[in-house]
Image (cartoon, rainbow over all chains, first blue to last red; front, side, top):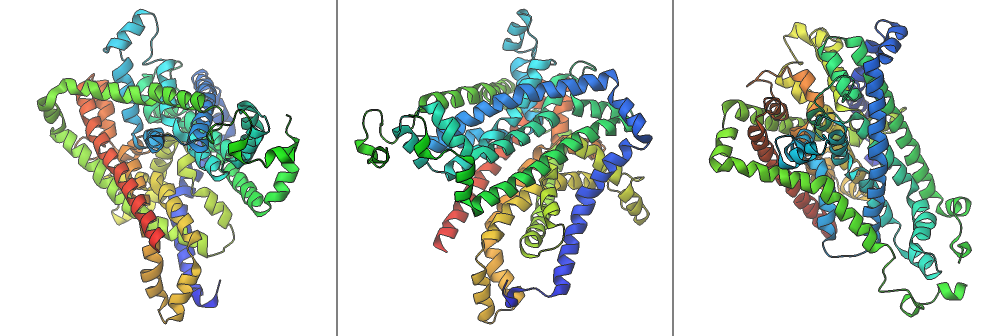
Length: 292
Length: 288
């Protein structure tokens, strides 16, 4: 940096200290509090709280939610980004706005809308109930709520990444006789793999941690429709703080893992940008070697 | 083989049509269908049911004192938190882009924590720290400052969830800001403060506004991180999303939907404002 743009060391240190102070009281202290509260009565007690039947069921249900929602999101994200980034069509910006819509809807409102559509008082809810399928206060409603909230996550990461790589490589592969799936698998995905991974990780973190929307549609039935965040709320409201924070610590570790993965991914992308040719040579089949 | 690849696209044999790649119909069809099923139909049907209320019923539902207080609390605290976030966001983005210091990458990664951490976890963690017997609450209590279970606590939770939006919109703009502009200003005799005020601030202003709008929009609808620290006293510390949940639990579907409609309309206006801001920012950047 040129000398004239360097701020005096005193100001520089004051600003860095201010930034660290804000992050400290806003992020670091609460983060430390989660683990301190969880381990207040020792690791053994915390682990026992995690292996209670209700807690185990909540963990299982949370993993199940992610296992259903993440693949569905992945397919949607791939389809949406392939359509938006690799083609031109009328109404594209409207479609992108609609994909982003769940970001600007409060999770509670998302849950409320599902209750209005599928609740027992509604026409559709009554009809489905007659067929023996309960949506609200049951797993299907929770899956729908989580899907609604996480819907833009993968697409949001993939669309800019696919737009940035352009279309020439795909067009060349097409001319050389590759079909759509071959192009996707061998040309497009290797180019956007880091964005894809980050989108999936974010989607997974949100699917496991979603609270507001799932809370509205779940009915809080213990040992049946409680995911980890809902179980945390119940335990906390019962003043069972150690158990609540033990479960919260599991989700916090997941969040920290997601953040570390993001840092590694950003580092990889930066390396890729610094040496694009080396990256191509080591990791990708050159275009002229594609099977015909 | 290289001869085939170098053929102009228009004269390529057979299957190449109008610059299009395969799979357009399938991918667009799947996108639109699933978006309609998962997002659009629930929103449309839910809102359509709100029309059962009629204009009079809607007006009656949203003008109850408890509803008005909750809406006012949600929007005012979200606006204040958004403004604080905008300021803090500029500070953090500036420090992260301009000053190398040990641990900068860890700090940079940590900024996204509120985005990755489940809101319920954030809620109980903030409450335990800022409650009168918590680590920081203890220090504030002798000063007569109560944070948890007051609107101040709500604001704090909203600052927490909005932080990544404020930082991440300003940070790339500062990174890409041409430092030659600042050099030129300095060469022409501007003081550092003048340079910041006249050169840097105008360049990042649209991003700051966008960050504010995103944090505000997120804050208005936030639920999980707020309900633990808020205390949830009707008329005092009860946010609008919580009132929706309360009304739902009392099977007052119409009342719940009426609040949701008001919030959705304002959220939509925010989205519109963000788009206009971005367009305006893009035009300004294009002119510069």
